[in-house]
Length: 234
Figure 1 (tube, helix red, strand yellow):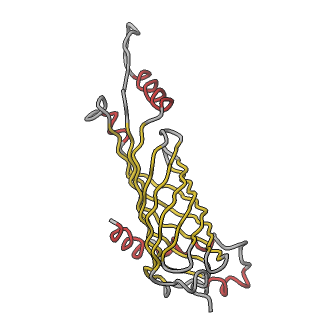
Figure 2: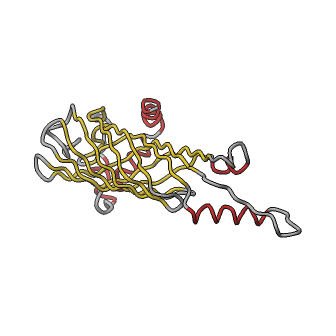
Figure 3: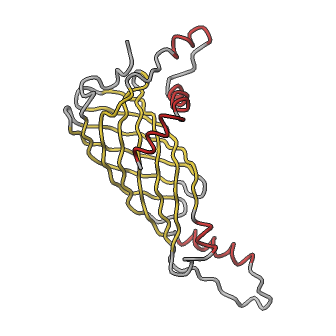
């Protein structure tokens, strides 16, 4: 899945990546300096350089807290201090009581019940989310052992609802969806050599479900251990 996502980004997402990378810069360049500014962006240094596994708690506006895990690939620098990361992640969580009550109320409003004595009980509902995303991170080295970063990104979310009562019904169909999301991250890597410890806070805004997660993990970096943050700088 990750390789297919990477190939898709390489074919059709290059311009979007460059545009989002520009947004990470401080301020907007004026017209006289725009050409020099854009010349800093290049595909030359884009290559796999590190692999990361992480795990941590996640919560959202319509789900109970659970754990989420992910795999991320550092794809190198597209500009000075700006690196590209490709990732996949997964979680499965129960609907919150408040979200389930709202869902039942909406269903009740469309049911024809002349005697007003029908009851709608959906029971336990779970919602799973598989996400593929591309992030751009502005890297701020704090010395040889610590690197901090800020990031923005876009993701594609594949969601699936299930439950003993709703399986095979239109209710399950309503919960199954593919949607886009906007990511924001802040985090740090600790480690002077190839193995690093990572800690990251990530927020996601998307249709139907917005989440916040705190994930920690390990990264193995086989390239770029000595030039974090320099990227394509001359």
